[in-house]
Image (cartoon, helix red, strand yellow):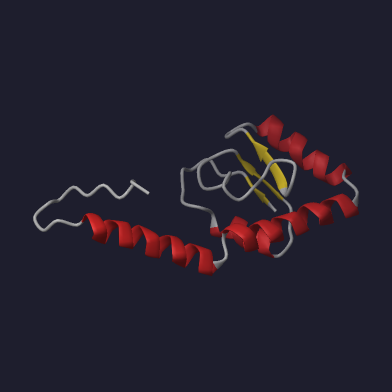
Length: 116
């Protein structure tokens, strides 16, 4: 999977789905992309808007033997299960909401939920 995004986005759904399907990834070291890829483990991170680095990364993948690409793909699948499983994401939301409610004061428009 090659996704050379240069936009600052949320965690890329397409990258998560590619990892879940055991596909190694080439993407940019950018917000929303770097969270999915551990460089050299389940893919490669390249600098944003750097075409020569993108070409080098793609050539590296082409030259890589199939078993090494499969190892990277399986590592991506494990990462998705370990870090992005919906149960983990829902638990994180629940914690954030609980912190918000613990600090909620009627009439106070500024709430600090980063204390835990």
